[in-house]
Length: 137
Image (cartoon, rainbow, N blue to C red; front, side, top):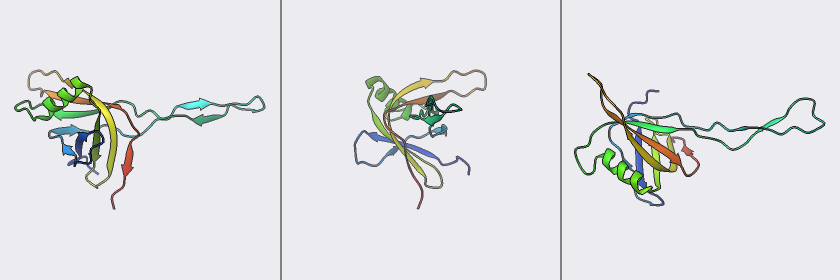
């Protein structure tokens, strides 16, 4: 499946409002967890024993086309939330209807540029919840 038409929406944390989609999305991150492998060996074991501990979703960074031409441009809106350290709810939706919902704080970073190079911006997530996956019907 192509990533074309994937969406990222946000809303105030705890709100029941619809998600507002952020325009200009160019790239979505890997989603999932890499649980920490924890050694849990008893003195009677012949080989080391392991179990998985808590997961780490790693860095979640979304890439956007840089547009800063109005007060409601995603770049300005997310910058404001980042400055205020506000926690938001997010929903990533894939073209097949699969959704991933989570809560996060954001940071915004504009990329550099050069001759014939586009300027973009990154939306980085600091997770505040688990990621809930909903499969399409």
